[in-house]
Amino acid sequence: MRPVLLLAAALLTAVTAAPAAPASAAGVPLPEQMADTGGGSQLITAQAPRTGATRGRVTWWDRRGGRWVKVGSAAARFGSGGLVDGGRRTQGTSTTPTGVYDLPYAFGTAPAPAGTRTGYRRITPASWWCQDTASRSYNRWVEGLPRDCRAGRSERLADYRTQYGHGLVIGYNYDRPVRGRGAGIFLHVNGKGATEGCVSVPRRAMGRILAWADPRRAPHIAIGTPSGRTAITAVTG
Image 1 (cartoon, rainbow, N blue to C red):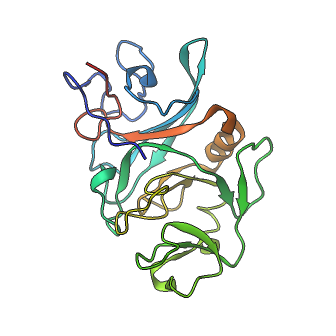
Image 2 (cartoon, rainbow, N blue to C red; image 1 turned 135 degrees about the vertical axis):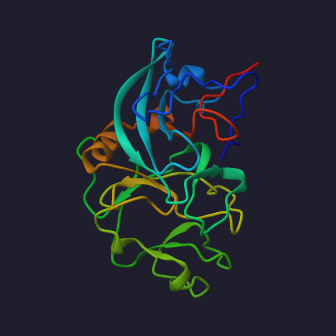
Image 3 (spheres, helix red, strand yellow; image 1 turned 30 degrees about the vertical axis):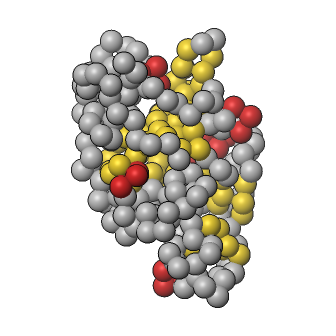
């Protein structure tokens, strides 16, 4: 997990509140405005117009010939509690953590879309995501609940057949989990409304993202807003 990026000089306000505008008024691609894109040559940007918003835009990009090129874009949903600095997030607040994160693996209740190259885990009736802060399996996929992971504080993945038809794990609080900061943050298919902290997109867009993502190119996701502590458009001084 990388810390939330801050603007080094003036805030970049050229990216307007309209979620359909992923680049500045000058036409500079959004990744070109960022101080850190994760180091790979593929990037997903998930941008909301402000921290309290539950809707925004997901765009996926390739780096080609030294430039970032937009591959696709879709409307997105965020947590019902809006967005918050990933380093300050508290579990159970239904907020989406801002920052730049890797994408460890894909998963789903349905078979992997054709062309998927990312490691893919198929959800079974025994698949859970442990969210119990007292468990040694905190913020991990488990097949069958360990004794120290309570069902009432975890998520049975098969219960979300639509939302988890296809998804990508977002590496928030994942490598070295901080207990109580949050667990189970994914990029997944839309449900009926805002999420509990994940980023969601239409089913067709999720399938396109999985067919596009190439682990050899180290794809990352950048989540944020146009300005402030949660800025996705941070520049170096």
